[in-house]
Length: 67
Image (tube, rainbow, N blue to C red; front, side):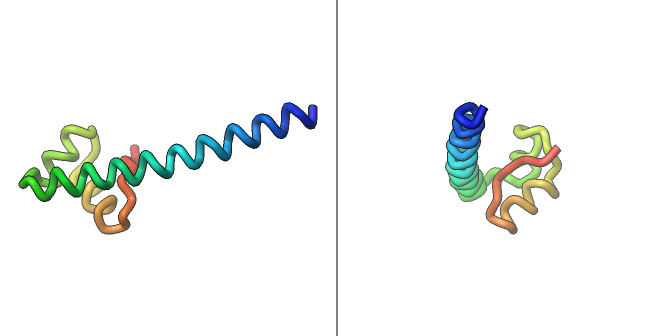
């Protein structure tokens, strides 16, 4: 059981690192789209979130859509 616990822990760490990297990439893409002239409302519609959610992502530097 300890070996299984170690494997699960390692996988969780790996996934957390991947999620962090994907969040950075999503933020980069959001910044690029905003720079091209798309509005926060446009991005929200495409991501299925509100404009306010996009505004928070940009303000906090976190591009994770929240349900």
